[in-house]
Image (cartoon, rainbow, N blue to C red; front, side):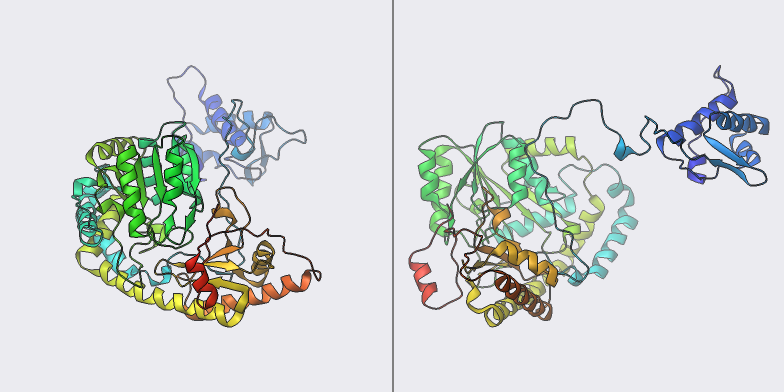
Length: 521
């Protein structure tokens, strides 16, 4: 009752008698549901002492409540909130049951949903394994940030983010991405989605045409739609975004922006070729549109030379660069960042100051310390080796346990495989049966702009160790056996064949795919 007691307010200066003020306050808490049927009220002496009033005032208030049927008294047992009358009250007893009298605007943005997973479900998702987070070092850094800089990190700070982390991010972008960046060119956000939202609201006006990849990250699409963008999907193939298709589109109408993930494209994992990057940059300068570059999973490139972002090239004045530390550390520490030219950055900072003035300076300082003492770099190197091992473990398990049912190319980087499924297999039925077997994976349908079923799936390998990955594929194999057993002989798959990004592990079909890549249309 202590929390309830502190909400009581009575004022001797008011004309209304104190006992009626007290009765009214208790009655309001009962109607709002803060006090529920059966809850005990404080004793009259206890409440009188707490409110510094005469005990008779409390007794009179309880009598008024009893007369209204809101409380009941038990001899020697105290006063309790009464059960509600049989006829339902027009006043909602919980906030969830309350219906606003004003009209809500219509929305065409579907809600994001995640399946409810049973305990023990193995999840083939491209998320970091949080079990490997340097938690001890991070906790120590956080304690120091609070202890040594408590006032500066717990009050209002620079809306661009804490200077310590901006210094480290600017140095990282210079050293590993080739971006000529200073701390003033960096804005820290709480997540990649918040960063994209700020960029969208800065650059896009309702009705502006924005090109996206035909297969892309659903939350990014929703952010653009909420800003009023008219989205135009462009195909993706083995070399990334189809710039020929983009150039054809430019002949029909002007574009405001192109949003893409050229490095480890989400969800297909392909890396955009240097030739296409150069052509896209030239088109952006010629046709005066912005490039919103989401540099997804830059740190986790295993094979070949590192690829520099488009923002590091000649069109940097037209590029807004967005990145994240989420897959380096953990989604719960989802610190992201934006780098942009000064004119754009000024508007981004003003918008950020309006919608989220504080940020999370304590966490930012702790992460900055991990940069400063080299722990973050050591962690990235460990994770890169470990995730490469897990990538190879998943590919081995798929070949051994699923054989010709799947087809893929080992990606150069990223945290997932993009896998083509034999067209005789109903991939939606497979995914549902897999949940019953205790393994989750994502078919391609949610990534497709038109939400079409496709014979592809994205299998993440970063979330589990090699033994868990092998067990996950075993469960997938059992689920596939159930799907095949349940389908009548001669019946075709429910998933219509669809020409898409065709990636293969090796052999004659791989060579053919490299000679004549298929496209997502």
